[in-house]
Image (tube, rainbow, N blue to C red; front, side):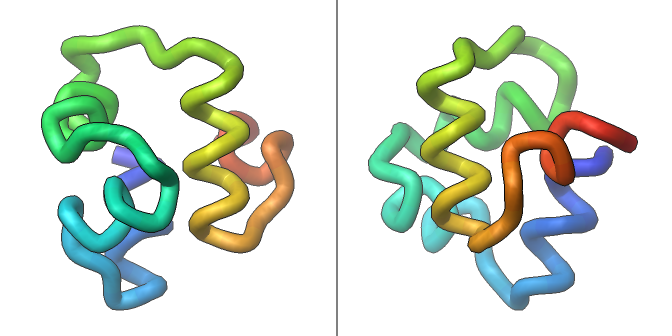
Length: 60
């Protein structure tokens, strides 16, 4: 839910975020739906794509 809110607040689709973070769209979907535990590398990429700190991404 937290990732979805952050993504939507930036006006990004799942595909847009996936492209910016250089991960698969299915990865974003699975993280948002709590079907996947992301690795630190993926989280760093997503935080970078959202232009936020890693702590802002994981602290909710």
